[in-house]
Length: 253
Image (tube, rainbow, N blue to C red; front, side):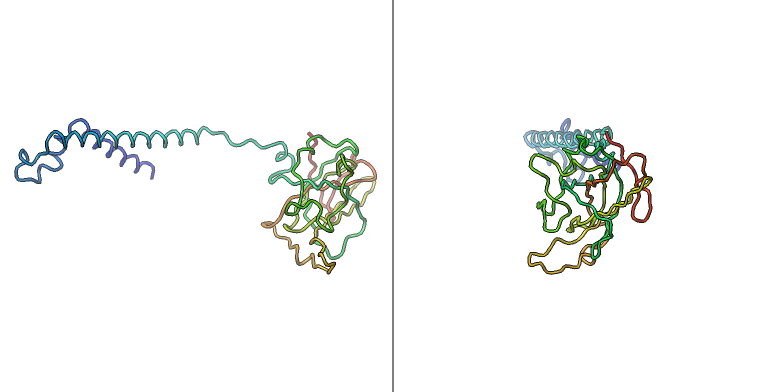
């Protein structure tokens, strides 16, 4: 369709240029033939002067529109693709939000909670977390960083929740639900990790159905980065899901 607009613009530009250079000839060709006596009916010099002004304004407007269109097209073709950020290269897009809390793990699968999808892990040294974590977006539920029942506890003042962790775990969980439990099984060769989500605790203490309230729906999910403490650093051990699937290991920058 672009070429159609180009042809139309060229025709309009030619007509405007003709009217600017010789409005009398243009009138005789386009209008004069329909009169009984063109020499008598032809407008005077003042009318032709007005036609010149109108054609000049039209040409200027057409030139401006054409220039904007060409510059925009060239700019769109020359614009390089947006570079991936460091966080996107490591964790993918969208970048997970960091749950900056001191996490306590369990060894028994929780009942009544919804399992999250574990996506990737990163081994870190406990007590010496990578500096990039300081710039990670923090997790919250509608601005509340500590909704009732959320996993772990708040870190001490001037400290971080992930400082004692040995493993950062990226998970995908349902929106409007909160991380509530982490289960870890460690052996000499393997680390098994799982994360569960659930609804926040009700203000009146009433029981809530987190399994029904936190459905597994990829189109209504969020990514969360959970710090997980271990008895010892990951080392050469492989990290797997609760189903035994080996997880992608993210290198520390």
